[in-house]
Amino acid sequence: MKKQVMGMVFSVGVMAMGGKAIAQDIAQETQQGHALTGLTLHHSMDLDAQMQQQKGDALKTITADLEAQITPVVTQANTLMVSDITARQAVQVAKTLASPAEEKVIASVSRDTE
Image (cartoon, rainbow, N blue to C red; front, side, top):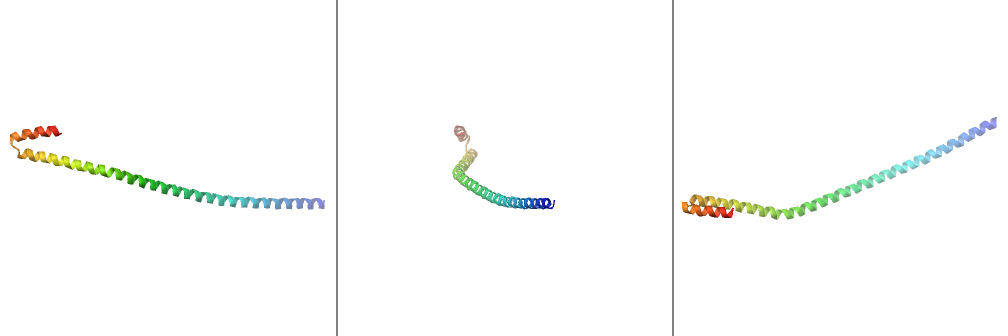
């Protein structure tokens, strides 16, 4: 009986030591998993930062290209608008200073140019 009890105690001790070894293996694997997760997260954040930088650079390039294309068009439109306003003002001044016969000529020219 004593041998049986000693054998059972020995078996339980061996099982406990095996369980402890398994627990240590699990702990080590868990630590490695955490390290890998951290590394993956860091790498993912780096990639995200690079993508954001590339998007920003692309947006700056597109904006600069659009400004380069739009600026001359806006300048030309402003010039035409000023020219149109100046021409209308000139017609108004001419109408104010004109005799009745000249007003008829101005009116016909104004209709032709509008």
